[in-house]
Amino acid sequence: MDYIAAKKEYAACGVDTEKALERLSAIPITLHCWQGDDVQGFMKKGALSGGIQTTGNYPGKARDFEELKKDLEFAFSLIPGKKRLNLHAIYAVSDKPVPLDKLTIKEYEPWLDWALPKGIAIDFNPTFFGNPMVKNGLTLSSPDETVRSFWVAHAKACRAIAAEIGKRQGSPCLHNTWIPDGLKDVPSDRLGPRLRLKKSLDEIFAVKYPKEYILDSVESKVFGIGVESYTVGSSEFYMNYAAKNDILCLLDNGHYHPTEVVSDKIPSMLAFYDKVALHVTRGVRWDSDHVVLFDDELKEMAKEIIRNNADDRVLIGLDYFDASINRISAWIVGDRNMQKALLYALLLPNEKLKKMQDEGNFTELMYENEQQKTMPFGAVWEEYLRRQNVPAQWFEEVKKYEKEVLSLR
Ligand code: RNT
Ligand code: ZN
Image 1: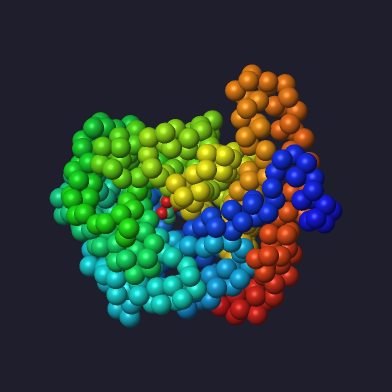
Image 2: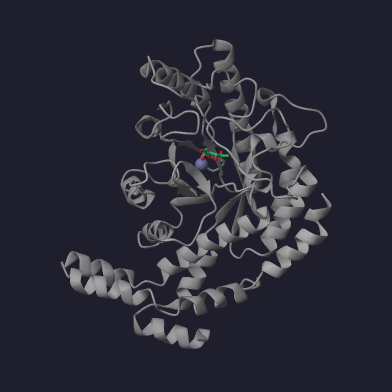
């Protein structure tokens, strides 16, 4: 079916496809740089640790700034929509190694010089893993004062960098704190580490920056590989901390028990917070970081953003890493799927469906929801791609890039 016919069919349901396309093109998606090199970074301090793992050794990963930039540029050329880029502190660009607690904006200026002229704003993350200063699996909650204060200094340095990035790009930089701290086996003290984490956060957030420059968030997790028994930064811990200290929660949909869904958490957060940040990923059994697919939960999350008119209140970032497939393809598939889900939600007769719920008209609601699943969604998606000047079929281009660029690495 062509777009004109699809537009008519949606109009008959009371849905304006033109409005949907316009709204979709204005919603920024933050692409995570770390899918490009299996979360290695440029500092090569140590193997990935702290409950996160990449598996696979697909050839051609980016080995330095130039290669990662080139791969991102190529990926961006095949991704529609408004883009942001997520950096981790370990992607510092420098001739000689800079310790994590001594980082400054200087190490990220090459990123800004590259991204800002393209209209791509940057978000930022301190890196609390893959470093010898992680002692007994702990960082900000460590009982060792040398360790704890090192990581506090790292976080403070990162917030200064993020605030400066936000200032220069004229758009607040999301600065997200995730720490790996936890225990493999039954704890003999669950409160102590949390009180130390609280103390560290208080020290870190004591420095105030304007919200036009930086938005701080904290990311919880239920467990990680090797830290199965206890996570210091749990959901309750961070949600209380964030509420009391006027910072944001970041919900990673791979970080909860499998029957808990982030789609249900988004509206709860919107009832109390101005903004909520997301790490969109796909959890599979014990892994929290598979490539994002166009599946039911992704659609549900998108619905909560769209039908609550929370386009500016939910900050969407991607967070997954698959080293077993072409990494650029992983970026494109995940980013396009996020946008597909948003479009799917935008093309629903949301007001009509809400009314059916409120009137207790559940029979028709089920009928209507099922009818929606065979609407000509694909034709509207393809029109979006056309308007964004990106191809609908892109795999041959990735294969060519793999042959001409990646296979020479
Ligand atoms: C880990 C968290 C965290 C990381 C990135 C690399 O479980 O999801 O967000 O994936 O910071
Ligand atoms: Zn995450």
